[in-house]
Amino acid sequence: MLRRWIIIASLMGAAGACIKSPETALQRLMETRRLSANLLLEFSKTEDASNRAVMADTDETSIAFAGEAEHTTQAIQKDVDALGPILNELGLSNEARLLGEFKDQFTHYRALDHTVLELAVENTNLKAQRLSFGPAQEAADAFRQSLQGVVAADPAKDAWRVKALVATAVMNVRELQVRQAPHIAEATDDVMTRLEKQMADSEKETRSTLEVLAGLSSPSSRSQLDAAGAALDRFIGVNAQIVSLSRRNTNVRSLALSLGQKRTLAAACETSLHALEDALGKREFTATR
Image (spheres, helix red, strand yellow):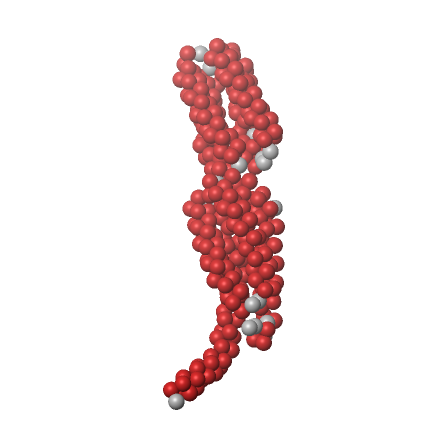
């Protein structure tokens, strides 16, 4: 009698499992669809945040978007880790293959995006630009104003020559200043080297001109010449910082990677995610175990 009740209980348990199993499997299938949809949404978010970090015009904004991109990237990895076992449990081999393709692509994407974000938050080109428009401009203006004081203080007999030398010195500094913008925007080393050579030539000519001016000018203009020399030293010092920052080219490099290699990887990731979502959307419960 006891054995009969054991058999009956076992059969009832099996029947209960048969009744419960379809509902559980259906719930698991719905979970795969939710995770798949999340992956596509999260990838779109991380791509957008990364692009915003590259295009940001301040360190604070760039860092904030880079942090957002990294946070969403971690969410993607979490959903991938959750989705894989469910697909294997339900025997969805095609969908598991598509997820595997995305995982491989996302690994490459994530490594490249990390490089892009590291470059973006440095903002060396933007910093160089700010120095060019700020301290460098101020030093160049101070140089010009000091030399104008030399013209006003000099004797009439040398006025024409002093004016010519002052105009030449100011022109050389302005030419050096003008070359800062293309240097900051340039991506190739050869062109930057050529621009730096031209800058050095302009500096050399300016200092030579100041030496000639010192021999012609009256003692009363000595303070103005000293002020011009100090302003030139400041300008050349700032220019060296600009060149150093520009040489690192982090904004130019991050933008080039974003528009080139990273865009290709992102497109491949999105293609795999769309294919995964479509495949899961076509699945019926009867296709599961």
